[in-house]
Image (cartoon, rainbow, N blue to C red; front, side, top):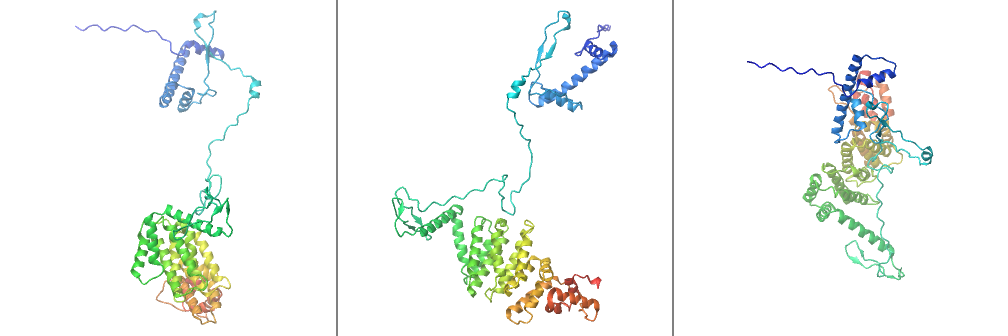
Length: 493
């Protein structure tokens, strides 16, 4: 037989956390009369909302690795629930609650807590020093470097001052100057000192120069390892002076093109090239040996640019002067002039191809230098020839702006019109080769301009104004080429 189920005793209504009496008192303060059923339902809803806010605040408390709930947790919970937060309560200055004394009239009311108001002494507040709030965190953009040069602004770190050279007049503790290392590595005795003063006839300038050489040698020894110093000596010795050992020179250039461990040696190689170019182009030195030296130095610069393992960008301002000097020098050795200018133009073209995207102002600056060398009055024909070859190396638009729009071809035509010297012929041929860069692709039908045709006659007249009579007469044999230079499309005629 089954046992009868026990019936649970009926439970009366139990009061929640939020009392109904508190809700009625609040309604009466607003002159609202609430029935008991409505007040009980509202009290239950208020209690549910309080539980919901406390649960959300507890999540923020646990994520903050804390065991005490703060006012910021409640504010974050209200924001999550899309409720406007309570203002005036901060976790850094929590409110202090005090318990009020019991009321003798109603002992069943229970304990009452209230927030104690802080008494502010205005005299003390006025006497206190005002605290200025710091500015908030902001972001500001500034130039760290402009084309490799760091501007001197407060945002950038200050420049490292160079160490001052020791005073050669300063005596040592024993009353004499320190020994000075000479250029050949030998030690020479410095000027003796007596009571802090030098003896009569002492050559302090020589001692100072030797001291400078010693400092430079010490700097090189600190930067370069012994292996790199030996490599540098063997490399420069196999390249200069030019010898008949072609295999050794080819091996040295191949090493510069492919070796990946030459970054520390790069500034010394560039300086060696610059000093070699200056020495070969000095006044009165235009022998065949100087031409061979310049050819080797241009091959060295080209090899360094071909080495993809080297970071050449910081040294572009040191590479360009020897290249442009070789390209634009007025009197190169006659037997090597054409080859040297062609090699310098090719090196310049490679340099711009590799680094013009990184430095957008590099091509316009070089083009301005070449244009001045081409059209400036009083320039030598060799300089103009080098400028034209440089424009060809820069590109097609550089040739158009330099020879056609800038008037370079017209200057060359007027200058070499009545001259039959070797330099004039070479300059005219170089300018004609440069103008051929602007020639359109050859077609099966190539006709010349007809002077009797008014449209062709206008093109010839404009062509003479742009490039001069000498070049206009040769370009007029190809109508498509002439229209390309003048800027007229073939369909416009």
